[in-house]
Amino acid sequence: MKTIHKFRLEPGKEPTSLSLHDGYRVVRCEYMVPDKSVYLWVEQPLRVGAQTREHYFRVAFSGEPVPDSYEYRGTALDTFGPEAYHVFEVPEGERSMDIGRSSNHDFSGGQWHGSEAS
Image 1 (tube, rainbow, N blue to C red):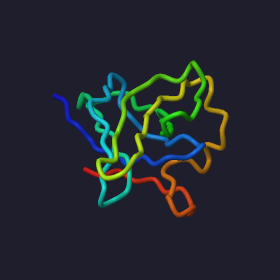
Image 2: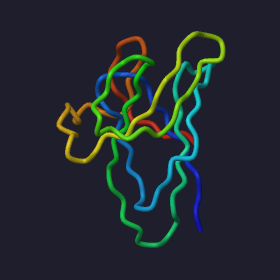
Image 3: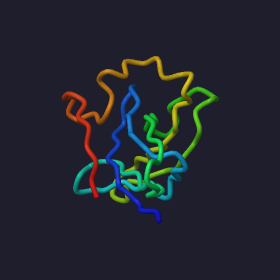
Image 4: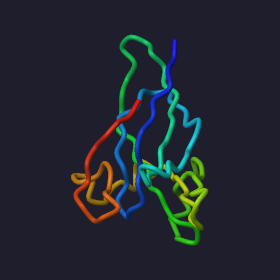
């Protein structure tokens, strides 16, 4: 069996940490206007005993440079504004940023907060 979960991501220099089952697959990225946030839908296996690992995702604006090693996962468009948000997965060897505060960034400059929405 498998399922799809929705996770909230927001732009910022620090990656967002998600705890995902091995064998996961990103299936959709979308910008939700009411929340002013980027969401990532991830398909995950529901196997008993499936290993879970931390994976890190970074949201970048159009034209914002990211390292060549980052893996592109999708684009979310603001249908009422000029912005496009591009989701990249940060490779395991490059997660040396301040991970202790990573989860989700508040657009207003607040603290990072982890959240998972279904």
